[in-house]
Image (cartoon, rainbow, N blue to C red; front, side):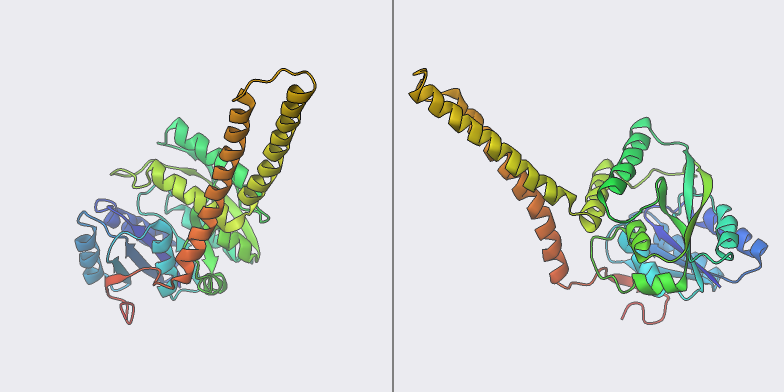
Length: 310
């Protein structure tokens, strides 16, 4: 059986069309399907659409969050409740064509535990978004010790053994594509062209993208801390040179004015790097603080999955 995890955030017009497209693919593959929709606090009619869809089709399961917890948390909730031998993760907006699931599944039968969809082209996205996404993944690959595939999202098929390992990772700042790469196993890719949204507007604002990028960097790299340390040494050395020059000006060439600008330069350099270092360290400490609180990762308001709301 293939379980399909579909996070939902204000996708009322896309739910049914995506269900029909995915169902057609599963029927073509002649495999049983399970749909796990995770409604991430939608403010439109997504909840009502999902409830009705579940009444009409017994393979449709839904989880309604009590509020918006975020895309990665929604996918994680789906991973907690799937029962299939293989699991597909796909968004509901249609940008990732469900028809590619056939290629992912057939490739997985060759002995791969993870088959991720690699974007050859991104339609319907601004130049700014394409550029930032491109460079983020390339920079992330350079500063992390794991190989996170370039130009990929969460759209992929994974084996149940991968799901079991993901369930053992309790961190709150989820970066699933990085976690899956960290787990290992046999992984490969299938290339596809990303489409435009079927309808509606994306819920991924630039603010959310920045937060997501920070989660990815801080979860899999200590590079920002190293940069803060190195910068501290560099600017301290510059400050030391300025002190020597100040003493030289004062006692050797006798060219010294009280309140000389070098003092201000020194303070700006040292103070700036201290603030940067404190900010970076604070990011890591805040993530430690969030994790040690041991609050639940998400809160379920309603679900038709047995024991899901317990």
